[in-house]
Image (cartoon, rainbow, N blue to C red; front, side, top):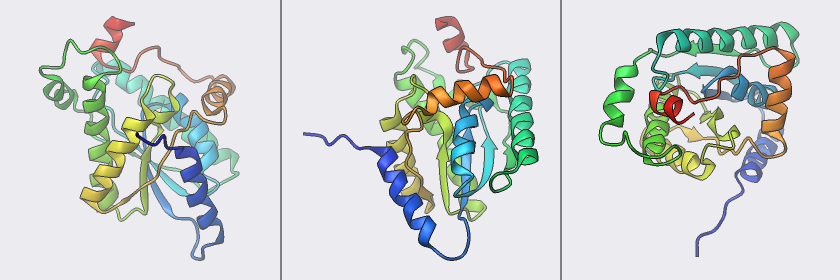
Length: 209
């Protein structure tokens, strides 16, 4: 019988330890899928971590859509930094390489949304995040993806933990939709007038939409 894990409580325990540790806030390398999903995550985690947002999303298969989304991410971070209220947020934009996504998706084109193609896409993005986190000597890495009700938090954490063991960087467990995180992201998207896309970015999800 499998045990259902509460990733939010696991995160709470890590944050509690951070609160009593000496040496300042740890460094977090945060993969972000988009500005709306990152809005709550940044508001929440910047109280405890020095965050570098890693914008790496080769699943966005149209250049104009990619440019629009990355611009919104940068605009939101600039607004948060101007407002203060936590550690300054940095951003690193990864390479835009949709060819890697299409190579990964070969043989999985007909998979339903939320299935094996999506899991492979999670791994593609998280593996690059883990590599960069290792190269930058970050304390933790994680992703904003778990805030979405359409994303499988258990699978994301499973992949993240496996990659943490491979690259030697701690995975920060998360299920950011908990405690009304998704609801708060909608409120913040309205506050900052963020572009909220209605599909993940890939051609397959656009068709499914």
